[in-house]
Image (cartoon, rainbow, N blue to C red; front, side, top):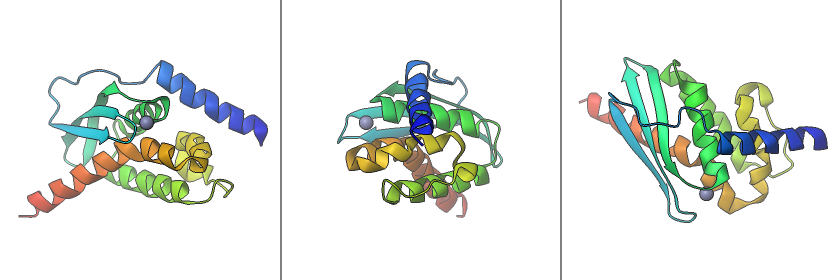
Length: 149
Ligand code: ZN
């Protein structure tokens, strides 16, 4: 168990140090702001949504290692994927973060997001981890409401 925990910490540190898709996206159809005043995390997600697929997704901004690694993984996991993939991941991630720190983690459903299991012991950090996901969810929901006329 300790080995995998260590591996997870490494994964977060690695994404923080070398974030994936960390750039402004020219031609983004949507820019989503993700801001967590409690920590000062502030990111912009650049999204190109074609039909129901994220054809491109990048991010820029500043924040703690947890929020930055989470945003980095978000772009990595969603690029080229359908919106439904986002909803499934967000739901699994959200429920995992609500559980107690030693609750088992569904690695099959979470993929690399399982790396954030350790933040459950730190309620403030949970907000950092979920930040970019929550921001994207909020946007998609408001967008659905609008396009539904
Ligand atoms: Zn933070």
